[in-house]
Each structure stands twice: as structure tokens, then as C-alpha cells.
Amino acid sequence: MLRDSVSLLKHLDDASRIDDPEMRIRACQSAREDGGFTIRVRETVTEPWRDLATWGPEDEGHIYGFNREGTALIVGLSTEANTLEGRLLDLASGHSTTFASRDDLDLADLVVHPVERVVQMVGYNRHRMEWTALDPRVAEDLATLQAMEDAEFHLVSRDLDDRLWIVLYVSDREPASYYLYDRQKRERAFLFRARPALSQYTLAEMRPVEIRARDGLNLVSYLTLPPGIEPRGLPLVLNVHGGPWARDTWGYDPEAQWLANRGYACLQVNYRGSTGFGKAFLHAADRQWSRKMHDDLIDAVQWAIEQGIADPRRVAIYGGSYGGYAALVGVTFTPEVFACAVDIVGPSSLRTLLASIPPYWEPLRKLFISRVGDPETEPEFLDSSSPLYRADKIVAPLLIAQGANDPRVKQAESEQIVQAMRERGKEVEYVLFEDEGHGFARPENRLRFYGIAEGFLARHLGGRCEPVGEEQSCAGQTA
Image (cartoon, rainbow, N blue to C red; front, side, top):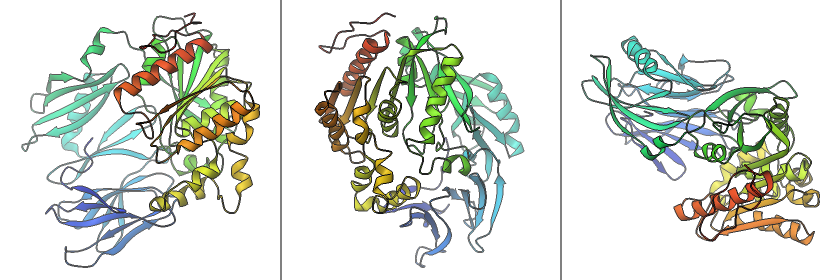
């Protein structure tokens, strides 16, 4: 999606620097020591920088670019509001004018005219991305494009006359289809499809659902079911997103499709702390790792069981990074809920995780401290939320996968809980990828990991499995 087609975004040191319409670097967003950020500007390239706006770790902010005259910045800011709002920030006065705001959702995206530098559309995403035209010149185009297909629409590029647009459609069963749209004719012509080989397969529908947590919070979630199978008493994989300051969205999700193809219901939950739903929802997760954040996941599992979708004896928890931590929490804090768990590069101790953050990530460390806890003043509190110190509670089979070169979650985070489990005679399968970091990027490693993971799930949940190379067999599969 168009973020700033004229301005050039550079990442230099601790700042994101923005060019004005004349290609002069005149704005930057730099990290503060406390985990917040400051927008700094200058009138010309020879004048000194000055602070224009600043916010702490409790707020969010983004720079989208300059207006046409170079006198104001198009920004997203949540200061003095519950949500990220679209604002025009005047460089001379520092005053801002709000052009897009909702009480319940953060601004998710926007479209800026590449020459005139005016905001033409804004997007908000609760269940799916929904666009609103602010510029009446594109209102009919937006309505036409949205009516053409039951999918999310994105404007990728346009010609200088603004007659021809390249548009992208994404849906749960279609990774990406590109079209050339003629604004005069109100017609589109197909260009190409990403991953065309998938067209021969029956892919699964991703259904948005809202689940009410025990304290009343509504959790926007996504349920993907195996196609052609009655959704009753299925093995369930609770697939927990990382971050945790991120979110799951509707659309084509390779892991959800993989799990559904293997016979599992896949449930993805935007637990408290997920982004996009405003500051109150985000900060409802502060100091709640292993506590209310985990309660949200358990409440979602209970919902799936009460709906008759999930077999309570065949529930797995699976995830990477924070999702890996959540998987470890699942089998240490609520061992009775899960039949097995898969942890991918997840931290096992919050204290050692924070201690391993390098000095050049100090603002990130301060953000973690403000939202998770301080290892210097409250180590016992962090330990009380750390799976490492509850390894004796684990009864479910556990698969742990780690990259040896992970700069965020060190190899030691996985190995210390593996050691603790083996010392107690607990079942654990540990896979170390010597040439990977925070997640697995190399195709051969991804194939190997997913082969191991689906074999593990098949043995403990009874889904389908396809052996990869000389990896373990799929003995025990029943679906």
C-alpha cells in the first residue's frame, strides 16, 4: 500500500528520515531513551534540527510524508486520543488537524496522491480492511473496485495522468491478484496472480469471529476450518501471533492453510496487547504476560470447545517469538488444556530475555520494561511469568525450534528450558537451525521445520502428515 511514494524513507542510525517534495531530508522520527519517539524537522538542509512533536512509550506515531508545499507532515498520532489518528502536522506552529479518527480502531493505512500529496483514502481494519474515500474524486473508483470482488483492495501504483491504476486484491483463498484498472471506463484487466499453482487446490475459508474474554474484552479472532470436513470435534491448533505488539489479519495465511489442509481447525486470536484496536486495548496487556494475556487464549480455546468445533482432548498451542513464549506458558501454567505445544524462538525467561537486549536496542528495552516489568527492581515478578521456572509442571509433549543466530531471542532461551525439562525426565523435541535467526528464512529449513512440526502434531493430535526426506514418519495419524 502507498505509504509515501514521493518521500524517500531512509533508516540511518536511530532515525527514519523523510524527504520533502524537493527530495531534501527535512524530517525524521528518532527513538527516545524511554521507548518513545520524537519527530524532528528543519526548514532547509543547512539549518539545525528542532523538535516538532514527541510521545512516550504509551503512545503510537508514524510519519507518512510531507504535503505538497512542504509545510506540513501527514502523520498518524495517538497523543490525546485512544487511537492512532490521521493528522496534518503544521511545521511552523506544531499544531495538528485531524482528518481521520475512530474511537475503536487505529488508522491502519492511507492513500496519498503521489503528486498533489493530499490524503485520498483511509483504511481501518477490525475484521477486514475497510476503505473510506476522503477525496470525492476517487469515491466512485473505490466503490467500483470494492464491488468487483469479495477481497481486500489495495492501490499499488498509477500513471502520471492518474487514469490507470495497478490494483491488488487479497483474500483468504487468494494470495494476490493484480489488475490494471481504467478509471475512465471503470473496468479492470487481469495482469497476473501470485502463486498461481495454488489455483488447483481447494483452500480454506478464514472466518472472522469475536470472542468475549472473561473480563468483557472483545477479541477479534480468525477461524480457519478444514474444507470438506464437518466442523465438529476437530483437533484444534491455537496459532498465537508474535510481537506481542502486532496483530492477526484476514487474508491468505500460509500457516492457517497448511494446518487446515492437515485436518486441524486453526484459531488465531488478537489477545489484549495486539495492535490496531487502540491504546486501551494495547495497554490492557501491560504487566500481564502469562496472566490476562494468557487468559484471553484460554478463553478462546474454551469458546471453540463450547461451539462444538474443538475436541477438548486434542488442542495444541503453537507460535513464534511471543507466540512461542505463549506456547511455553500454555504447557507450564495451564498444562491441563493442551495435548502438545510447538515453540518457535520463544523466550523461556523474561529476566534473561531483557538482560540479553544489546545496548543499541536500549529504547526497545525501555519499552519492554514499561510494558512487561523491570528485571533490576522486580526480578521475582518477571520470574513468576517465566515458563523456565515451572518446567516441572509440563506434562504435554513439546517441540522447540530455534535459530542459532537469533539476535532477539538468544539460543540460550530455548536451551535452558530444554535442559530443565531433560533434567526432570520431561519429553521435549529440540531442533536447532545453525544458519537461521529469529525465524526461519531458508526454504530448505522451512520445509524441514514444517515437516517436523506436522509429524509432531500428527502423532499427538491425529491430523494428517506428509514425511519430508528422512524425517520422522507420520505414525499415529488418524485423519
